[in-house]
Amino acid sequence: MTEPKAVGLNRFPNLQPALSQLSLPAAQISVSTQKINPNHYSCIYPIMQTLTEFNLAEAIAVLTRTPATLDVLLRGLPDTWVRRNEGSTTGGKESWSAFDIVGHLIVGERTDWMARARIILEHGEARPFDPFDRLAQVKESQGKSLDQLLDEFARLREGNLSALQAMNLQPKDLARRGMHPELGVVTLAELLATWTVHDLTHLHQLSRVMAYQYQNAVGPWSAYLGVLHCNGHSG
Image (cartoon, rainbow, N blue to C red; front, side, top):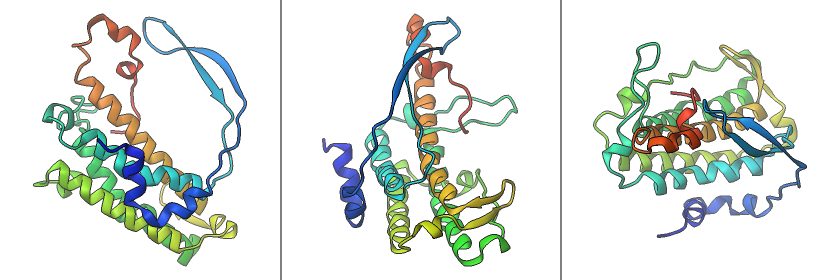
């Protein structure tokens, strides 16, 4: 099997220059304990210094790898893992499956991140962003296979990242502001950082949804598996 990292980089050869310049600063690490489950078992985890300044190359390093990560994890899996969800939410709505999550990411590639970046650069705060339909995948994914969705997401992400690089964004561009219909004024840097963390949010959600399918099968080990006691985080 090809390693995920290689797959991700091979999908986006145009991004090699940005990735080769990537360097991460050392962070100060301290150790603390946190109760993470109902049985009060403690988990030792590192508290790392967070980065307050957005770095485009660092964001691209994550955004480049998401399609390959999803592909390696999901392609060819039985429906148990990709079509089942976590049941109904407290509001009575169906939660999302892995299939739904990939469909949602596709909608974002088509209508959110780069569309909003262009609005910021062309109109600033004068034109608010178009509202984002976070449930559009329910209709748009009908009749498609997971493999088709994975291919579509990889193609759209590659095109968007190529377009992002072609913008040749400078620090002054990243500081430019737009108008979110709910959040108000936001910057281009904040939009691109959110694109990155949105990927990570749904990768987190994906692990939770998949783990849920074995929540009873693991028996008493459930007490040690924090992913089975995680609530929220989209979908």
